[in-house]
Image (cartoon, rainbow, N blue to C red; front, side):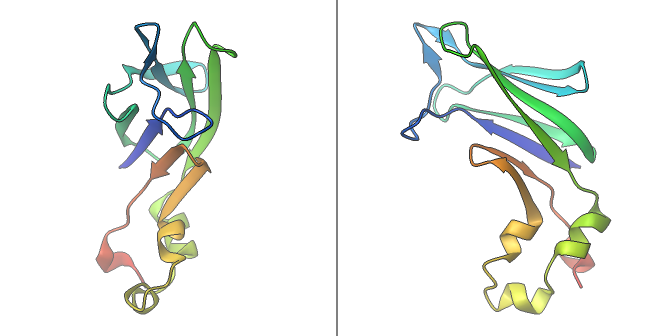
Length: 124
């Protein structure tokens, strides 16, 4: 299973938890179906949706006092087979291959990361 973490930040990279006492809300959808809606954490300005299957998702963040009031991003979680096709060998990870982490995660944009881990024993 996989995890999508939505982190709300402004242009300067500062956490945005609320404006005017109203918290930001993160929404996760498959197509038009909402599968989760959470208020962002008050310290880290993030939400975590876990136990997700591979597939295409739409992540949204909503706040009535900002423009635009809803931002959305499409995210695709890969299967283990797709990850393994793109993953370097164990030896290159142990040798400090800086690309290894990038192959084990998917970033739709810097503030929205969808992680899918592969058991170590499955790596080539």
